[in-house]
Length: 515
Image 1 (cartoon, rainbow, N blue to C red):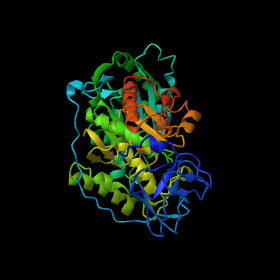
Image 2 (cartoon, one colour):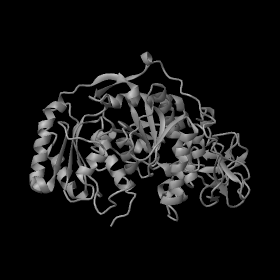
Image 3 (cartoon, rainbow, N blue to C red):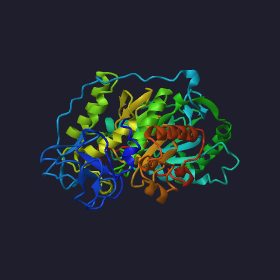
């Protein structure tokens, strides 16, 4: 992690590393601005968050940010010139994975001194941060039914069950017209099972149509799920159709509510906290404020025995070598590279997607030139600790510390995989202002800059822009975020929860063909 000194935040630009040939505009920089300490005068009108050449960069020379290559100059770039996609070339370059060469074990806090939060201890020993009843559809054809059941349980009808956070539907658009065997079906089923078993659910209903390819029986067998007092199943074609299934589902949930309401929060170790790490609407400050601050919080969480789940495989591409070097073993590092190669060689060949260079218009406007630069910031959310394991999408996460899960960069799909893997909290950094929320795991949002935080304060939980303002360090902000983890896990409502977000963000990854 790079610590930014208060002194460097006073001027118009930020130098991130002594080796860098670019600096980042801390504020809008006008043409003709003399930059103290850097010995150049601005030749461009440079918006805040964008890069400026700190010295002459020759055509073909790497552009260095945090001493990491984020592209190559496609022309000679004079000192003081804005550096962005117009004069930066994206191209592949060799990276030394140096598996496990920089591995350092986490220095754990003694168990007796570890932080705690108040959570719901389930019968299997897992701990929830929320207490929902969930209703899952096996297929799009039962989506309306699960939504209607959940909608019946209005706040007024749930008023006598104050310990129940809600009844939530998890519907999706697949489950039929897809491959009947292989990874696409296995992925969907393990995603559904991850939610059905999730510690943030007191109980679950699973509802199928009856003739779909994702057969309820196949789901239960593959994932070793069994009907029980806390897991009910319905098949619409056997229950009597839409209306009767809705009525049966409502009655089932009504019967479950008293027991779900009887649970009480208990004081538990922070080792039971599993945080999915997300970013969306990234900007030029993401790698300077919110992402490294979240990484600092993950480092603290790991020392207390908890888990941070970094994801979004296309958004670590180009800096994956910084993770493989920290892997706990060569085998773990190779798992990560196998996932990268699957994306590059099989999944996205010839497609105009992030891993092949192109970032979104919002990222471009925010000052990010290409995926290498975005990945540099995105990877920082995982902190500086060792990489302890690599998981496929929605696989159960059992390792402690910093881990990686293969997901797309699309936030709802990525967070769905993390929650299915067991994340009981989501931490989401944003520079442009993403409006994301999730259920059953609460989501906290971290703003990268003060202007956006002030503009969108109803959606943002914490302002990491204070780092840029020079009032707090990255490490101090990391401690604040860690403390917010604990408060949110203990029941403090996040901004997205107060706004009612999360009912439409269950989006399993669709990797197969439709027929």
